[in-house]
Image (spheres, rainbow, N blue to C red):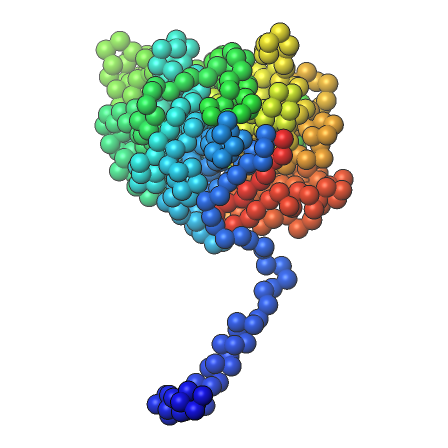
Length: 543
């Protein structure tokens, strides 16, 4: 004992004496350590790789990737110790992850998915070919990813005649817009050209800050098939040992690879070009009359399609000298337009109002917006049923009005029993909200209308469990001058909050503060099923 005491004293003598300054710093540090978190601080869990579904149920991980979609679903598997994993989309709008608090990194999300799944995803699904759904699918973010099966919509099938018509129509529109951009640059209208850049970014997948040079290259013959979006989808295909499966609506009920009892019902997109071009809600499908004719960002939309195929168009700089049509254009749109005459007098064939100015060319933005919306409307729509006649998880991508209306155009044969879209919607307990809560990607409607809409969802026991997930970062969506989008539309957000009793999870928001209306009864049970981290929300769904 004496030796220990002596040694202790000796050590104390060797140790430097603490100054008043050091003692004061220690007290301050001690106070900081003991300080309690603010009452409104979110209760978050440490990020980890565990995603385990309950027996017969599922666990849904909604990644906070930014303004975009990335979901990992763990279904109860054939092997109780190994879930079946489904990855649905992985993309974001550039700049949006930095608007989250704290900011997220897509590489961290990729690493978490690889760790969670052990590097193997049973089925990887792309809903549609837009930047904010696919641009995270790179070898950098997912090195050595292995995939059992890849599911695409039928619109990606190279052997489908209707899909090929859509591809040609899309390419004609895209090349037309690229040409229009070049014309606008030639006219010195950089503002209008920049407007088109914004929309072209969606379709080609390049980041805005890099895009100007690529747009010039595109005008000189860039192949849209080599766009960043196409490259991302190609990488995903190469992660699987076999070709993708192309899914058709109402064709058949598909088992989830590796899952024990879970099945997928394909509701959309419709195999009908007119319905894919049918974009906007009508009548009581609208959430707010003021948005009835609005585009993706809440700005009025123009014509939904161009009336002229590319083969019937002439570049502006060739119109007046063309051997076949030059005289026609000179007489009606020539260099010496005639002012409009007074009332009752014949209008000249070269009236000034026939000419289109550079400012008028801003209308190309309306065509670009229509093209973007048509791509959204070609979204793969899946209703995942956890067990026969059981709970349903509805993932709609960015499906818009025409896609929604088509869900009730067909039925499913389940061993002699008919399953309808209405039946699936009534059993829905989770709705991945369409297009970040945009006005035309959730239909309001009424029960008994015979069409899919929010009012039909979550009936009976499903109503007490219904949860909505909105993939939106409002600080990014609302910034000006771009994008200045109403994502989510307040009327839709409010309707979801009311329907779900407050059980709404949004990418940029903490857990909801409390229940709304009838949500009070099961609120604590809901909270017990949710885990929040800076990287994701997890939601457990019991069988």
